[in-house]
Length: 250
Image (cartoon, rainbow, N blue to C red; front, side, top):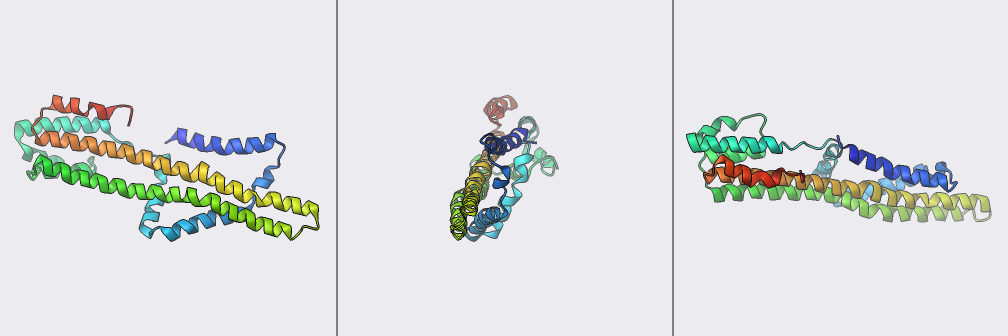
C-alpha cells in the first residue's frame, strides 16, 4: 500500500481545512453540493466527450494501482534470467521450454522466452519486445492524459460555476446579507475547480506516469537479459549488465 501517497492526499486537504479554521472561516462554506455537481460533473462530462470508452475505462481501472501498486520482482527476475542463461549455455535453448508456462512469469517474459525457444535471433527478439513496450507505454500514457485533461478542465468549470453563482446572488442585490452569502458560496466552485485539479487530478496523472516509467524499466531489464541469453553471454556477465536496473530507481 502506498502510505506516502495517502498521507500526501490527506495533508493537502487537511491544510486547506486548517487554514480556513485559522482565519475564522466556517467550514460549512466549503461544503456546497451545487458547486460540487457543477465542477465534478462538468469536468467528467468534458473528458468523456474527448475520450474513447476504452481509454476512459482503462484510466479508471488504473486507480487501484495508486493505492496498491504492482510490486515488480526485479531481484527474482534477475535471478531467473541468470538461471536461464546457465541452462541455455549447458543444455541449449530448447531446455527453456519448460519455464514458458510458469504461472509466476508475466506474459511479457513468457513471450520473450517462447521466442528464444523458437530460435528467434537477438535483433528480431529485441525489435518485437521493444515494440510491445512502446505500445503499452503509449497506451498507459493516454490513460494518464485523461487525468491531465481533468486537471485542465476543472479550474475552468469552477469559474463557470462561480459565474453562475454570482448571477444567482445578484438577483438578491436588494438584500446585502443574502447577497454576501451568495457571493461567498459562488466562489466555492472556484475552490473546488482549482482544488480538484491540483490536489487530485494532476497528482493522479503524474503518479500513473511514474508507475508506467517503473514498469517500462522492468521490461527493458527483461529485454536486456533475454537478448544476452540469445547472444550466449554467461550468467555473471548478465548479472553485471542488469545491476543498474536493480537500484533504488525501482
